[in-house]
Image (tube, rainbow, N blue to C red; front, side, top):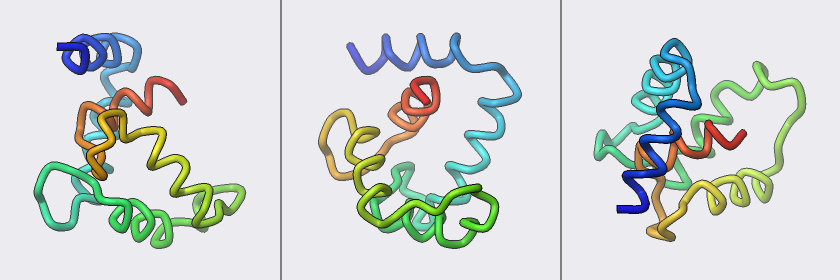
Length: 89
């Protein structure tokens, strides 16, 4: 229930265009199409487009970001957690 409430709030804190972009990025990162991002998928996605980012993040920093976004400690980031993390950026 708490996850649903947080997702609802995230949807209201993020603009419609940003949600569309976040959805697109999530789907591109989710290479196995299971609806969740593994730590490996997140890191691989970052490595593919790291030239877009102004400063480079270390693997340790990416792992910390992953751990912070993985609210239920499942070892994966689902779409709700993805939106919540974006709302908290």
